[in-house]
Figure 1 (tube, one colour):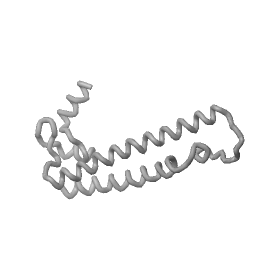
Figure 2 (cartoon, rainbow, N blue to C red):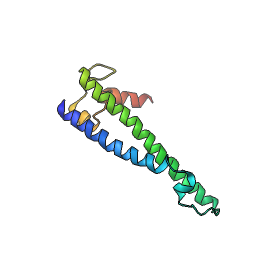
Figure 3 (cartoon, rainbow, N blue to C red):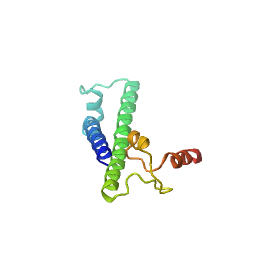
Figure 4 (cartoon, one colour):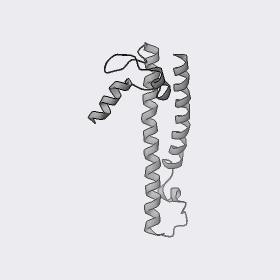
Length: 119
């Protein structure tokens, strides 16, 4: 379990840094500050569209990072309560290879494959 706890903590630390940087770059700045146009002169609408698209993409990445952070925190709680590594659907063990690749996995590979087929 220590191996997986270390993996989860390292992933959490990396995500915290990445999400924090994205939030600092986007959430605390106005659209004008984000685009770098502080002159007060208007600029081309295509530039505004591009800047808006880039900002939205970065905010989406930050949101997904926050979601992943929750998954990691939940996995750390499962380690503490002794349910880590158990599939939430069938109750079987989640393989070590899968947990190494996706340490916050909730489903074994068979149940995950079935879920993806049904989606």
